[in-house]
Image (cartoon, rainbow, N blue to C red; front, top):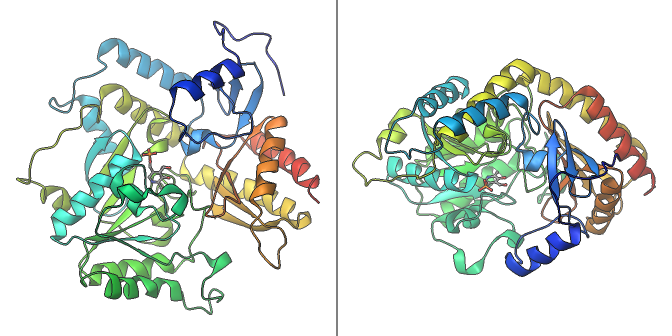
Length: 441
Ligand SMILES: Cc1ncc(COP(=O)(O)O)c(C=O)c1O
């Protein structure tokens, strides 16, 4: 870990920041690490804390810094835009706004064409529910267990992790089917002999928990917070057919899986050969500038005509849209989906090598630069090991590596570097993880 003698202009210490955090911020802020880590600045795949310690950021600000920290093109273009015009609101058309919508329509699958930009994944999913209900005239929305969809009442209800829900905030009209969690299959079956039995549960859930017609189903192509749960290839094709048979539309939540993250395709749902009627995106779209988007096929967006006005004060603002345009340009040039697949394969091979000698790794899963390790006490019982994950976190931090975690049992390590990460950085991260895992053998 490299240390710089002083961080310019900083008069705070870890403990002074934490004391203000405790005094002035809601205690419900979830913080990583026993001694939380106030960050000061970043460059490329690295960040520095306020004491000057350097870390290789292999969580990428929760899959958000797609092209790395402090990218000179993002800095240059957004700085120029800030000097020119920061805000205009959606009451006035803006060139960045329409250009970004055009660009996203050109890389999303099928007939997805009309965008509504907001500020977060939560808002994007809220709009998706509204659009699905408006278009179909139906109310019930299906979702998957172990999913995570955001922080508002409706998206907390879509979320199917007790730890992330809030009783007082549950809204009607959202039902959950069994998710394709092969490692812990509730039917104790194995793919492919299971015949993807879990997909049929979507139909059972529609028949038993709704009035038999639905507005749609919101799904993450790979469940993110759920612990990178990756479905069998046939799963989403079967689910999409069921959803449409019951009058609904498919809503792909690409907040984590979008913009090439899963490798080879721009969006995760394309891995499964499904063309959704609605897609939501946020996180990595603008490299850290607040931004969400709900893109739909034309007739879904048009169904909202005459159904009441809505504005989004900060949505599609000139600076965030400039950041998103710059991010996409950099990705196309330096980290297109094919390059992400290659770096992802290198990361995956490194993790599988570690798993060969580490009995606490129950499964390595994910796609592209979205790789997870499910940590267990032993491979036979598959007993989740959240305490071991806590220790792995402290040890990787000591070695200067930042990673993420998730899963229903808090026992899945999530590894998601910036999409522009280099092969050398991937190898460095794998070597550091190898050292840490060796200590647990
Ligand atoms: C799949 C998914 N959808 C939606 C959200 C909510 O996004 P935001 O935190 O930007 O509101 C998240 C956040 O982690 C997410 O992972």
